[in-house]
Each structure stands twice: as C-alpha cells, then as structure tokens.
Image (tube, rainbow, N blue to C red; front, side, top):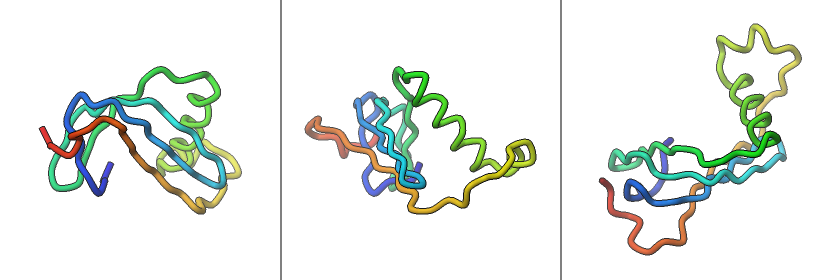
Length: 93
C-alpha cells in the first residue's frame, strides 16, 4: 500500500478501510517498508464478519474475479488509513 509515511518493520498499527460508507479497522503489523511511500502489512486476527467484508471488497476490486461476482457496486468514497500510537514510527527498515 502507498502511504505518506513508512513505519518501521514490526510496528503494530491499525488499518482503517472505508469503502461505500462501510468502515472496518484491522489490527496489523508492518511487514516491510519501501521508502519513500510503500508499506506492506500483515493482518492480525479478524472476526468472521471483517473477513467476509474484506473478501467481498477484494472480489469486487480484482478484475479477474469480477466475472464470477454478480451485481457489483461502483466504488465510492474509498479510503485507507494507517495509524500507530507508538513513538518513532517513521524510521523505515
């Protein structure tokens, strides 16, 4: 994911995803950072509801899966945010 800041590997963050007026927060850990603005996250534990919602969003976003997913919504007001309340998070690794 592209971000405005690259956090240090191993930092625990909260990933907030907003899509079509639905919001979920996913506990995650920074798996890698590629300065200046790319960061990979590893998701933490997900409830079955969050897993189902993420699966639906991924199916809607991936063009090859769209052929098997009926009546897709048009994406609107999508937003992804990452936050951490740990100090010194800007150092890439």
